[in-house]
Length: 501
Image (cartoon, rainbow, N blue to C red):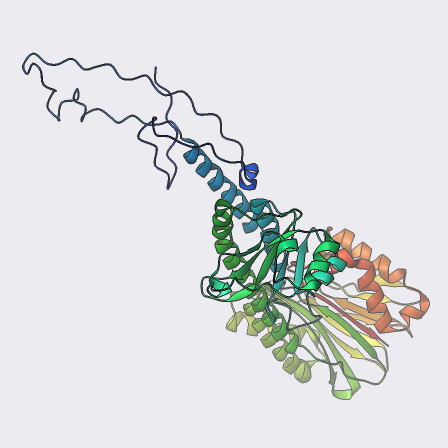
């Protein structure tokens, strides 16, 4: 009875002889990440001797005869230790690459790269120092972290940032093309600065391994450093595994960085298409809050002065996200402004014209919109909505939605038209308009999310209700507390527009 053959593995050829000498593999961190392979089964017994034929006594059968040594299948070794070790390495790399592929943000990918490198090298701590301008958020908003750590606190990272980057050994090629620079014993290194020795002694690490993070095209993302608690350096096999992993990891991180930059540009373009400031109009005080999704959304708002001291208020949302939605949003907002100036006193006519334009110029798009024609002197508001959320009246004596007619979004019907609604606001009351992204970001059903919005407005203190700026901040903070408001990958925009008469 013969022993079973191992399955074929890409890049690994089975041994042709079970008698070839092999040395036992040493235990290394990479093997601990994969499951241990079972011990090799005993070699198969030697095949029986093929008898000689009577036609040719004293000679072997011809080569084509199945009984000849040349015609027999070769003996296959069911698995040498070297092959088993190679299978463990491939399994480990596959597992680590799969974990990295699940990351969809630049920082998360860098942290996973650090963790995987620590697994392959057996190093419990490490950090990545980015090149200036590498982080996708460097051009907008607050300065992002340029150093990310694993197993290190913020104070420890601050100390390590004061240590100069290690230089390649004398006579070595440029560090960008080196697989890594090892310092196996910091205490015995002759060219180590006194400050570096002090930091190492204070943080308790005795050896380092430094690798530049360079893509295949030569773009330098930064430098990764892994710290060892005891003197030592990675073996040739560990360096080879880390190099194979980093070839994929650097490309993945560079792709996420470029994707984040594209999203930032799309979001910045969308912000430029919206009013930078709200107009100062007699009899009404305005306030707005707008948050854009990372991919760039199609939500917009507008407030403009109309003839006869009237005010036009608009909020809307184009379906989808990305550059196409941002561009459609800009075109619709500009068109709505023109229609509002010409026939703003009839909100239904304004939205009907906008629907016709959308159907003729962008038949694949759809949008929701709300337009209100307000007369501040009389505190009268005439409004119409197309598939949009009903605005909320917030005052000292009532917090209730405006009863608008149910209507389909623009671009969904062959001919859109719905009746308008008229409301007279009391003195000191505020009309609160918003997009459905405010409700969707709560993660609840629309009914429950609207109840949450209404409760937030009703719970605002009296002084807050009298100040539209304070009111929109209170509502936004209450409906979307920090974890919900700061979701980095939520696809929904948020618009909150308040008009107090």
